Amino acid sequence: MVTMKKYEDHQFSFIVTCYNFEKYITECLDSLVCQNYKRENYEVICIDDGSTDNSVQIIEKYRRSFENFSMIRMHNSGLEKACNIGIEASRFGWIVRVDSDDRVDINFLSVINRKMNQRPEYDFYYCKNYFEYFSENERYKKSLPDFDIEEIFERGDFFATGTVYKKSDLKEIGFFPEAVKNCGLENYSVILALLAKNKKGLAVPGTWFDYRRHHTNMSILKRQAIVEFGHKLLAFYERPFLTNENHPYQLKFEAEEQKT
Image 1 (cartoon, helix red, strand yellow):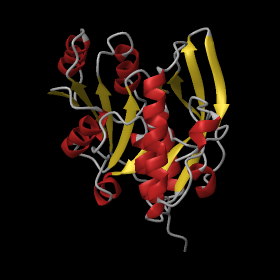
Image 2: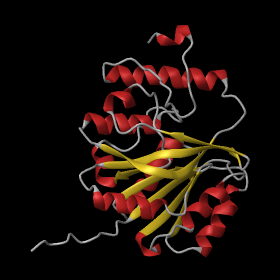
Image 3: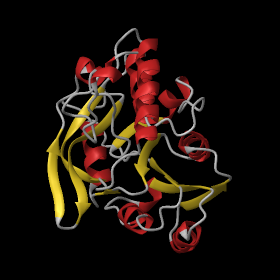
């Protein structure tokens, strides 16, 4: 007699950090509170990192209107600390970070939960496909390769939105690194730390989130800071900091930046 394994409804905590993103936060939060998933099995925690625009007022409306929605306000301390405060406050065992200018598909949690039941041997799950999103008229479907440790070490970054982690694994690696405020590679730091612990990820088929891109160029100083941090980060693993065609915003090195 074959015993059918019980289908599990996993419980998820969305962690959204916000700093002066009043222009985008509504789209982001709309995509989270309207998930096609049992409302008691997920929560949304929005951490405002000292916004000076109307972000707090917008988030407060969601807090008053939806169950399992909470807001944490803090003095501006950086994305990494805001993430960690949100994770520590979370009630559920699976953590989903969402950047406050991105949005996820209404079926994101139901699809991820189904795949987690089908392939429970994996430690984290992420979307294989996504839309690069500039505006409603500028959405371009993109694809990532299947999980490959070497490819990730050569990618140079890893998406925050669309990635689902075990809270216990994040705790094991010390959560997001706070030594450098707004380092620009906080999620990549987490992924590499998980890989170093022999954690395995699964790229879940389908297109389940929109990654917002902006036409404005990154400042030279910000770019330099990210590259410098990247070299230091990869040096810890005795590897060069590289980028490939799967880098989220197609960061490419100038000749002088190849040096550590």
